Amino acid sequence: MSITSKISIDTYIQQFTGCTLIDVRSEDEYIQGHIPDAINYPLLKNEERKQVGICYKQKGKQAAIELGYQLVGLHFATYIKDILKLTQNKPIVFYCFRGGLRSTIMSQLLSNAGEVPIYQIKGGYKTYRHWAKKTMETTKHIYILGGFTGSQKTERIHTFAELGMQTIDLEGLANHRGSALGHINKTKQPSVESFENVLAWQWAKINPLKPLWLEDESRSIGKVQIPESIYKQMRNAITFRVNIPIDLRINHIINIYGKGNKKELIEATQSIQKRLGGKRCNEAIEHLEKNDIKAWVEILLEYYDDGYKFGQNKRNILSVLEMEVETFENYIEHTFPHTLTKVLISLGGNIGQVSETFERAKEKIAATIGSINNQSAIYKTAAWGNTNQPDFLNQVIEIYTSLPAHQLMKQLLHIEESLGRTRSVKYDPRTLDLDILLYGNQTIQSDELTIPHPKIQERKFILIPLQALIPSAIHPKLNQTFTQLLKDCTDDLAVEKI
Image (cartoon, rainbow, N blue to C red; front, side, top):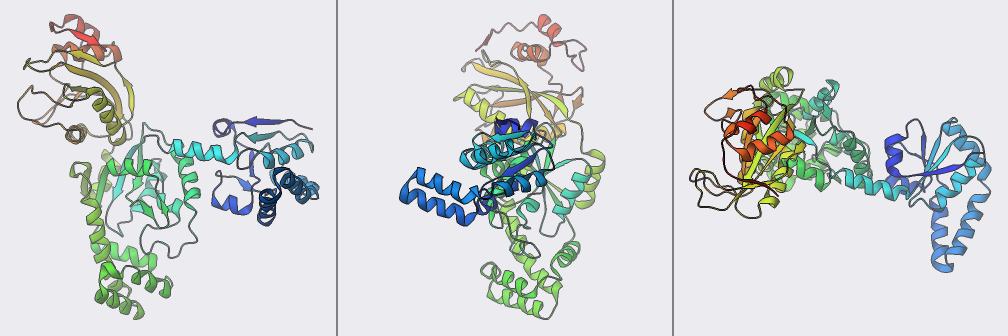
């Protein structure tokens, strides 16, 4: 005889491997959504659960419990035999909807049957749903792979995974290719709840300090939707738009759909008649009926390409890198940094609610550039240069990014602009100022960018937070620590920590 131990969902996720997870809810509940890798072994099957529910409404809780025991009591021996055979003497974790009676009954039953360790998830499936939603709100360092229909984006995502890069195949999880034809040659899609459950499970495994590649998607993939918390990050992420020759795109689409069920292809074509126009839709269907698949694809691409252009026009052009396929493949193979660079960025501002602006800026930086590894306190100091203006607030953050320095600067300028920054006179008041102070140990000198920032050693409002974050680091050009640079700095403006 073993003793049942109750565990939290976090404990299960973090510590329990090699166990058999059993969902004792009904078949329909399991299909609607379950914890990934769980096996369904219902204590009450669909019809039995319905009977208990009716009894509860008509006669009350006690009568429903008694009926439940009547329905399952005769099967206890079968339950024990089946589950022990199913689990092959591995530790067993049970759950029901709220961690209540159903999982308690099954846990106690198996506890009395042998020495296999038995666990029960407190709060049941409901706690997993809470964990999943919270998990999908965490920020990852996303790159989007874009391109017109037929550009083999999904295949490239799979190749990236084989190369050891972080990826999530959203269309694979949705069992849909994300278009009007996306259901063809596919089985039934999961429920929205099931899709979210598996997505959250994979999302939790992604290292936020390393790039995550996702395919460019609309919010809906067939009948499921990408959660808003993730879709918002995707829309703000850097997009690599890869241009594939039209003939290669056509051939790829033919390979996918050319042998599909003709009736399904015609119905899918008719579903986009409003966008194609009646005449072009009829022409496309005629080509299908004549088995001229290439001509059919060429007409469909008119619809798909217009739709893709419309969606891309909603993105900020500074966030889109457009490349020919050969350039992109060379970039991935030879240039794309698989190790991250530590970057120190300063934030400054003296217009509006500056602290709130800093928080919004950091959210955008984390979503589009890289995870924030550390940050200084916020400091207040008088304005430099043009002193007839409000005091400034300043902060320094440390991030890890795989963006090249010049692309990083473009993204920072975009974030400044999105948060109300306008440029007129040098040293003018501003809502937000973002500067790259250090980019690893690199020195960069160009018309657009100088790294390290040339004024670091002259300004205490930069040196003080830098010294707090990286006191023993060496300035790449001056060969002195930031502690020493602060000691020697002649800036006499007061810097007040707030």
